[in-house]
Image 1 (tube, helix red, strand yellow):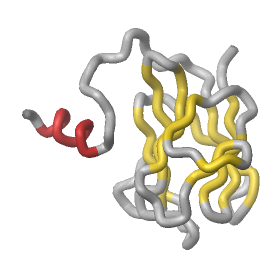
Image 2 (image 1 turned 90 degrees about the vertical axis):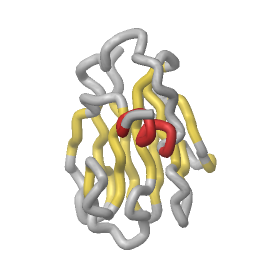
Image 3 (image 1 turned 45 degrees about the vertical axis):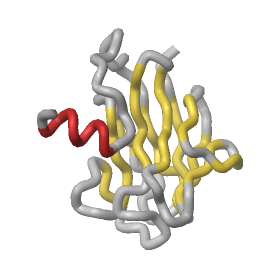
Length: 120
């Protein structure tokens, strides 16, 4: 098993290539906290959000884990997946382990609130 396969397995993802490329236009918007107003394009299949240096989106927020959650893309569409965080991840007020995202969903990680804008 190669390095990419091991990493994908450790992250709970399968190794199958996506059936279609990540569509442009997906954005995560920080709606509250120190980073309020920050917009980040979701331009890859797996975007880790956390306070650790190895996260793709590093946010110095003490109420989130080093690798708190990931926003991803696969054949089911965009999704958010908790990565074993201490405080959990919620989508629209409901605790979420892995949830397919819809346009205008709200993700809560610790004290951070993130808005989701997805292409039509």
